[in-house]
Length: 410
Image (tube, rainbow, N blue to C red; front, top):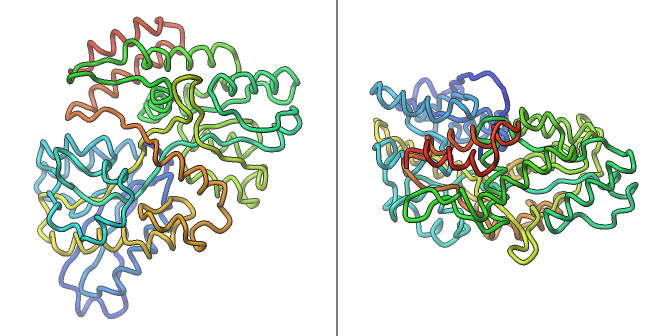
């Protein structure tokens, strides 16, 4: 999940009153200050783990998403790295190739193999092996303001991206909002997530036989849609600088009729203590394209893995199993949905977020991956720059994507 809150990093040693006497192992862990489980959630989970395992201390460190990969890789190179790390779905190929993560295929329980949603495993798999456990199961949904749509005379949210554009124009023409749509289009991984959602809708491909294929077909259609939406004025012009948290704040302030964002926004935008649109938040799967797709979705999930450098792999795996267990995930299911199939029929999980669960059942089954390659980082940076240039009119979509292909390292 590409996906960030600009929060300062920090570390916390979690112990019980008696743990200094019994503590034998300290686990150093790396998480992100993130738009899924909150820092408070993660701290609470770790505290509960330490209480149940007084011989294991957990040192929690949080960094913004943009620093998560670099921090992991640099720490491994120093020989004094982390035991457990959070990693994005786009990194297993690189991490496996460079011996960052432990192959945990033989450690995964039969219960997990049978109970975890099949698509969730793509988050942690590479070359037929498991390099961790999926933890944050996420995709981007289309959020909409029910009140604004009602005032515009719109009876149902859009089912296609063209309908989204049409509805946004109605809202703009009626003077309800000047720029009805908000996106995360800053030159960061966030824009790749929005772009991938559209690529999935247009049935495009990132790679073919290991070489770039996004310069034509659905990849080109996706960027053209973004550019047209931006130039039309239907998209908030600041979207080119927005990350997901910016989108959330704009939406919950009532300044967007539509927004593409992660699971976590649903309950936060419905919180009257911080949102002006609480009670008016609708959510559906991201739209499709007529004749090509019913919905669109990209895999923004993240996993927890044990590093190759860990001096305590058994204890580290014990922590991973605990954090990804069904009881823990069900307990903290308001900002991130569980990886477990049966959780989606558990009233404890679904209560109060039935609309989100209904959308999730459709979207999570349709998740489209960003390209799987050890050179993903180079490819992503090249695409980020291309999209920004096209949005700003510095280059045509065709030329921008052609340049990205040349600079992708593939």
